Length: 535
RNA sequence: GCGGGUGUGAUGUAGUUUGGUAACAUAAAGCCCUGCCACGGCUUAUCCCCGGGUUCAAAUCCCGGCACCCGCACCA
Image (cartoon, rainbow, N blue to C red; front, top):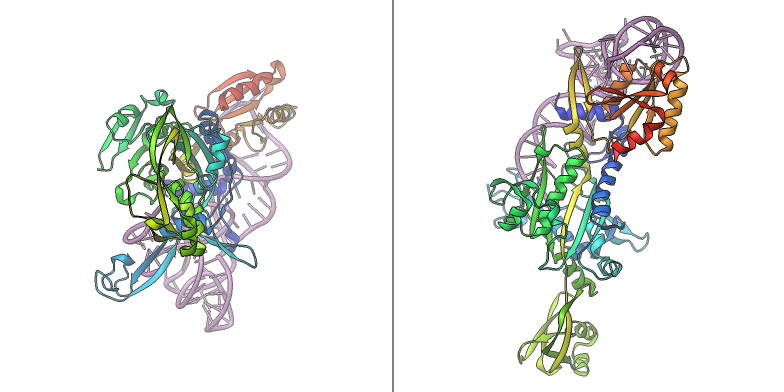
């Protein structure tokens, strides 16, 4: 039995993960988070919130899963996700259509069957009109389309960051490996908006000496500090390096083995359509090898530019110059009477495109793009006016640095890295050594034996812990050892046992999961004692 | 999507070759026991992936589907 199988059977038995819709035969690519799984996942997400909202000062928003066609058309996803695939009927290999030779298989020359592979889930909005829409493939677009409002919210100060935790959907060709490749998955994404030439991070000093393991574009493996990585231009800018180091910190804190984290740079040909530099945090699995769990990408101005272009909404940011400048500008003045006559219904849109059109020299025509059509506008349709203007600043399209976390994968690797099997008196014994702050249950509370008034005391303690916001669990069934074992298997860091001494001096034992050591603590101090160790 | 393998209580397995009362371990529930690490006793509940076919009779043989695992392909 592989680690993976052991973990998945434990996860099912103990209520971490269930295959979805199992009573109907199940559905590939979907998993349920059970009672303990949901607690653990929430704890991971809240830890993430602590990093990105509290610490980084970002704000979280929540936007719809269902996304209209235009949004994802503009972002490039419609075209990127609708690849036409050709499968050779003779040798059964698959190709992209552009690889075909004269519409035949490039390998054996056989006939091919073409099909459209759409990796986005399609849906419709409205019952009668049925407007085409998709389930979002990433949460990021919801942030980008709100940019002009968010920019106002942050009182027009750049850089700022906005995050979203939510579901993303991809209709995978063949989902495999449990929750490693799901069709409906949870992602936590941060979109941080920078000035194009100032991708520095104010807290860079805090992490500049943190070491990170890198696999560069050229497959070189190196371990260097964040600062060096930027200085040697291995990582393109400070912000990317900062979020790489921060990601490593986060992964360590939720229980990923430090030695099993590395960052691999995307090669030019594997970059997503929107990214110009991307580093994946990969986590090592005994079962699956290195798997990407976090993508940290420099999306440059790609998305905002695309949405500005197709929506027509000016989402540029404004930057004041230190000193106002006087500049001479040649600006085009459209002659609307002539444009209207010639271009009729398109005239309005053309005017919009010509606004603020700036030229360097005297020219005899310009081109504008309207509805994806390039239109030539001759000299007779505009004047060129030279004027001196005072410029207080300039508009620019912010660049985006995006750390994007796959929560489900991280969830699995936390289980794998913390799953320990030991021999206890000849028997297999399993422990989930989760960090206390992400464990689903923080404390087991037991009476040593179920008699002589011990259960009453233990119940009261458990009640008090819950009142203190501590997820705890009362158990009196089976031997004390069996109860410890149950808690060890699901990663409960502390077990509190009420024994006969409790009745004499009001103390209980607290047992540590990983060492089985015990200490005595006064009943009144338990809640504080635990709180200190789970935050 | 293609090829191979697998599908039996909650979990892990036996049984399938040779059709005939489905077994074992762990986990679970209840009662008892229990002065600290799954180890005791009694009791209980829970299974043949789904649909068709062959047969007096199917967990077992045949066909189809689905799911899982492996390989190939695919993979923001």
